[in-house]
Length: 325
Ligand code: 2P0
Image (cartoon, rainbow, N blue to C red; front, side, top):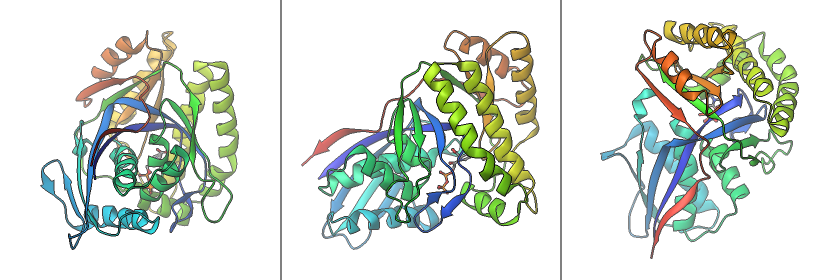
């Protein structure tokens, strides 16, 4: 069976940073994110009982090495769940530049979870898909759902409660400022491990995190953008503070990243409801209302080093696009 699925990327407003179990990819903390419209991965999976190995194409380019190994490991999980015993051909494409370093593993593993299970003849509910997607990448568990999403840290050793769930729809905007295509940053997985092992601020990060999750959940319930924005900025800065204090410190920001933070705060001082967040790379994301998004986008574009802006509305859940027997 040939199946095509699509999933959108997401940006965390309350960050995930650190793992409680590396083998099962269990997060040390929960997280809250917004799935974004417009930044999507489309993935086609076809199982072939006669093939001798899995193959993975990104765009038109066949992948080898680490990207292929990650996909093969994920397909092993589908095979373990009783899906087809053969091998798969996976063809994936992003509608945004992969090299730009936007969170592509979230949309990639969410789309792969949906396409690979269905084409193997398995019918998983969204919660089970979220648990499976998490094994590929922690943030992918969130991209199974649309709009605002909460990923649970979970308590169980087997990870069955480390899954995401939707928190509802709220028409927000995240304006992404792409700050050039600089050198490849420390990968998230390595950055998290290094922070947990060497940063004296990592225990403090873990300790204060549940309060940020509570505050964000309450802000979302009240549809209080200022309260949500404040938590988002704080959670971003606290995550980076823990990484900066590692030995050696991890600096994900470039000059334009910091300039954009100041620009966003200046805009806020001017009365615009806008708050920044940033992930394991130099790009900046600004949270605001739909009405303020054009002004935020125009202002962000004036920061020297911001080469492109993309204004994203909340995106839909991961979904099947084509099923062909
Ligand atoms: C997040 N990040 O909550 C955080 C904030 C980056 C910074 O989730 O190791 O690629 O594959 O589970 O999901 C990026 O980390 O990490 C991420 P793995 P992932 O969005």
